[in-house]
Length: 153
Image (cartoon, rainbow, N blue to C red; front, side, top):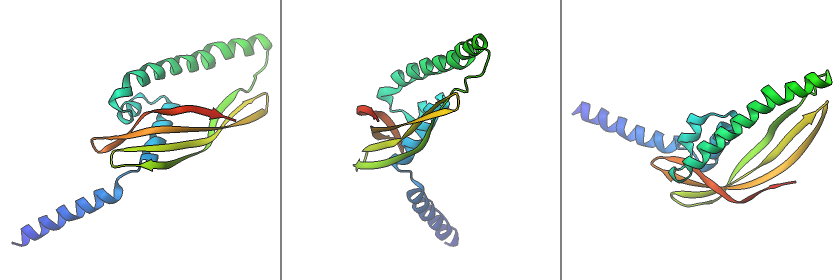
């Protein structure tokens, strides 16, 4: 009898803890965004809905190739020709993820922040805003496309 009570308590605790630790669509969107920036194909696959996986897979491969060509081939060649380092850098800063609409298995997440581009010591922040459609497949929230187009200001 005591073993049944302990088992029931463990089951109840695990259900309660899993409900408390379930992620939000905004957290899943953040993980997808960071995986895209890092070129982490495993996380992108895990965080992209089945309907969009093919497009993300090929888009990520093209992004990785362009990034490699820019950093490893083109930029060093230009800097070598010029004879000095251009100090080119690009990164995202202060990115926020906010759930605008939410249903049981679908949500709209607004992603906003700044893209900072710098060269020769000068930097230019460019603000951006985008809305993403997130769906719940199984127990995980997944990116399933952009709503409209990204606005750059």
